[in-house]
Image (cartoon, rainbow, N blue to C red; front, side, top):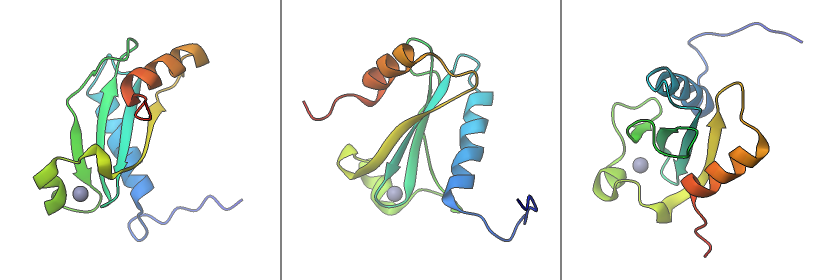
Length: 113
Ligand SMILES: [Zn+2]
């Protein structure tokens, strides 16, 4: 119920991530979503994708509340072996489920195969 905000005192990774997603979408007019890849070290990789599932921005790596990404990432550039979670954050209005599924498969891949 309470909608009071507490600016500046409490921040977490999710808020930083959201802000980053919005900044990427703002800079990528073609982007209909942002692929978010979380790494086991706490760094993130993100890139906008367009309606065809092609990259619509550069891949951005960042670490929340830090000046730069961690030494591990600087070395291996966020190796996919260290990915803990990946998903696409869709910009509103979201595409239909068929489009979403197709883009997810293309962008996030099917690493199990
Ligand atoms: Zn890292």
